[in-house]
Length: 288
Image 1 (cartoon, rainbow, N blue to C red):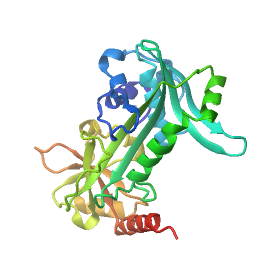
Image 2 (cartoon, helix red, strand yellow):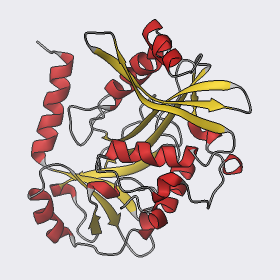
Image 3 (cartoon, rainbow, N blue to C red):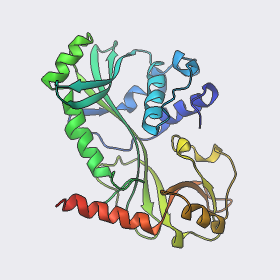
């Protein structure tokens, strides 16, 4: 899906309406209160909408641009700075995703934004399509490292150089989906928001024969909460098997189980991916 103007409005609505992926921790606040319809001037075209396409089409970068577009339409939030690199003179310590100013409340805000997709193998094991990434490691870094950075002396000095006098509150914007195993019941991880978006994942041998499948390119992972309007080109299960076996990584799909069921987001994984995911967990638990 492109970032071009007509489609971008649909993605903005997805961003505003989707549930958070993560619970807030420590002193962070969920972004949802700042994305309500009554504080966003919907339907207007911003400079970001009409800007030339960014050559950087990585998923995280596209999600950041989408968030910036929405916040630029906010009635009383000003975007002051983004991607603020913190360097101590010898090495990079980290980066602040975004700083905004709430004119209505006189509050300077440090935002962190994340768009993630994780597949549940067990109650405490939620790897991403790249199994080196996992939910608990991401949450630990987000709340244990990235947010505390803005309280550091290094960050305060850097912010003052940008005419940002302080940080009053910290805001987490998380989107994405947790995919649950098709043939096993596991509980949701505690860090997940109760209303998080859900899907299922299958191995090739588990695929239901009667289901039709719509493979999604990585560009279409943004907006998977609005799965019913992404087109109708689908594959039968036997066709999908060949598709998955030739894919270098897990395949995100929309599953159409029958005419009466709602489309369901999913991932199809190979046996090799399962082995890699389990090995990655063992390595993280026993690094030596």
